[in-house]
Length: 456
Image (cartoon, rainbow, N blue to C red; front, side, top):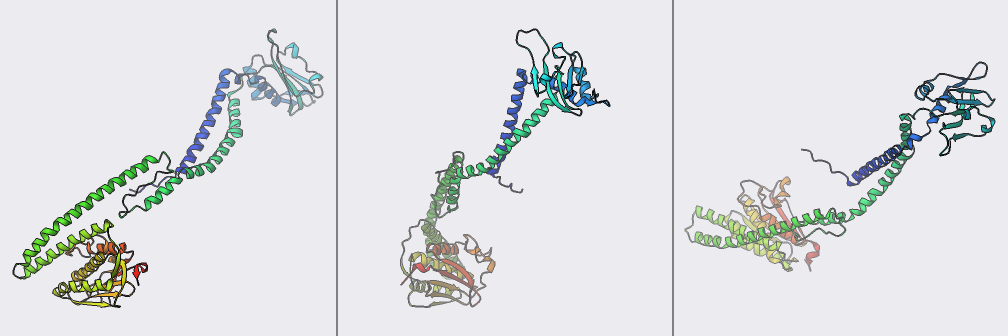
C-alpha cells in the first residue's frame, strides 16, 4: 500500500480559515437580510420605483413629437398586479402623459418640481388615509421626463437576489479576498513561530542512538497541543531504555554463567587422549569461550568503564602474535609479526585493543583457508593491519560484515560478533576499521586510529 503524503498544517489552516471566513460573512449577510425581511423593512422598499421603472422603459415619442406609451412586459405586469396603478409623466416642454386614477392632489406636475431630482410624498400620522407617491426625474428614449407614480406592485424577489448579488460582489467578495490575503500572510508566520520548539525537538531526536541512552526530548517551547505526543515519545524512550538495560544484564549474567562450565568442559576434554574428534571438540569449546568473552567485552564497552592510558601497539601486537601463534600453526598457518617501528604509542584501553587484535587474528584463522601466512603489521601512523592469504571478502560485503551476527557464509561456524566487537572498540578510540584486499589476495583488516590519540 502506498504511503500517504504528509499534509501541511500551514496550508490546511489557511484553506480552513479562508473557507470559514467566507461562510461566516455570507451567513451574516443572509441573516441581516432575513432580519430586515422579518421586520418588514425590505417590504417597504419603494414599490413605487417598480412603477416608475416600468413607465420609464415604456415612454417614447410619437411621430408628432408627443409623449406616447409603448406596451412592454414590465408595464403589463404592473397593470395586472397593481389594482391602483397610476402615473403622470411630463417632459421639459410641458407635455404630459398619464394613466389610471390619478389622485387629485397629484393630478398635475408643475414647474415647481422641475428642479427636483426625486422625492417621496406622503402624509402625517393622523391624516385621512391617502395614497403615497414617488417622484423621480429620469432619462428615457423621449428625453428627460418627470414621472410621478403611485404604489406599484410588490417588489419582485429578483430585486432582492440582485441586491444580494451586488452586496456579495461589492462587499463580501472583496472582504473575503482581503481576509484571505491576510490569512495567507499571517498563518505561515504564526505556525512557524508556534512550532519553533518542534525544530529543537527534531534536532534532539536526530541525536538519539543506542549508545546514548537516557536522552529525552525537551518540552520547552513545545505547543500545548503537541505536548502529549512528545511526552508519549519520552515515555516510550524510557521503556526502551529499561528493556535495553534488562537485556544487557541478561547477556552479562549469561556470559558470566557460561564461562565456568565452558572452562570445566575444556579442562575435561584436554584430559582425554588426543584424537581427531577430541581436537574438533576442543575447537568448538574454544569458540564457545571466545563467544562468552566477546559478550563480556561488548557489555564492558557499553558501560563506558574503560580507562584510557598510554598503550604501545607494537607491544600489544607482539604479545597477540605470540599467544595465537600455536593456534594458527595448529590450524595450518604460519604467523608473522612485522612492526614498522620499535614503538607506536596511543591513548586507549589496552585490554580492549588487545581483544580487537585477537579477534582479527582469530577471524583470519577461521576464514584464511588454513594455508599461507597470517601477518600482523604495525604502522608508524597508528595503524594495525592483519592480513591472510585466503579467499578475501567480496567488495559488496565489506561494510556488512561488521554488523552484529552477520556472517559471510551461512555455514560459517562463528556467530558474527567478533568483527562487530572490533568495530565497537575502534570507534571507542575515535578510529575506523576497514577491510581491503591483501597483497597476497586474501583479506586485509586495518584498524586506523585518530592522529589526536597518537602519543610521542
